[in-house]
Length: 491
Image (cartoon, rainbow, N blue to C red):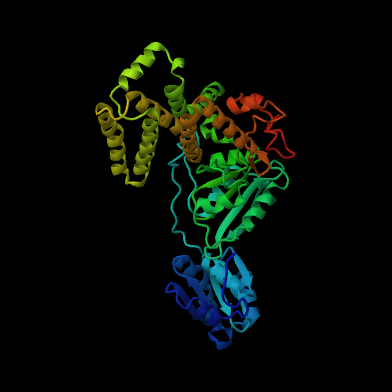
């Protein structure tokens, strides 16, 4: 909620003007319906948040028409007539508190204030100057919808409503941020989501007490179960169709005004390995691609560490020809295997950050120069061995296969830790680090659901659904760790 530092009572135009005394975009105008002083009202709005054309046509014009019609009532009787149809507006709210009027003005409303009655009417005339709906830029859509979320909350909720045309779709709104006053919407399907899950999400969101909710991290860190874990615990999507699919599975969705993203929970590791296009592909193709992603996850995480461990401690595991080739390639390299791999991993991270932060044309050029010219020059100068470049590049490519950027970032962090463990203890260190990672993942929960589900589900097909996609005709029930009382998705 807003943290107002002024008196929340004493509604009058003078009090409102005092609140916005330093705001050059605050506009007000005195109107005399019936051309009588006793019937005077003041119209006020914030320029840019409210639509000036709508104010002129829907509010000021009816008021001046009332003035030409003759005598007009005063005070509360005037507000009652305007509330019941004197103003051409689909949304009207009667306000008696100063803080409510200020909140409406900052939300794009136009307020009619009557000092004599110490009351006001708020009419919704939000500005239409918003970004239009466009195709998703991060989650590419091949067979799905070509619309993506925008920065306007009500547009995003309407996109979801178009996908799920059912009255069972529930929507509850709250406000977060003492200074930003950001609207947050929680959406779920009654009967499909677990009982109490939406209430728990709302409770955690209402408990957030910060100045402003302006980025995704301002919400995630405060509502997840384990904020110190590097692994993501909220699903992100910019596609309304994917958001609707998650709601049909029994999850709860969160939309934030100002963010072109939808947050979905609870989320597990298997959910981050799925993409919306899996539902559009043949189940054999989708299953093959899912298994490929899991293999890429394992290679991205363990390949550099395994290379370091085998090269330093377990050379007998390598075929003779491969060992001789690696030995010949490293003959003139002055650095050890551990230094090579760690330096290459850090260089890979630097190149990736440079490509992300620089403008697109410059970023692409920097990536190409770093990957081709610098890498090739380092190999020819005998600074690093070719096999180390191949291993690190393959691990990096496997990391890009991850559908979730947050999961990919967590894997890059764990990859470096695995390499350090392999440097210290070889394959024993790698196995110990892998065991600790599995233990950490098994201990995580996301709003009551195990993070390792469905691999740890005691009911249903279990691990099978995490690795492959079953035919739609055989997928009759929702996942047991997600479904509420309505567990069947089809007959």
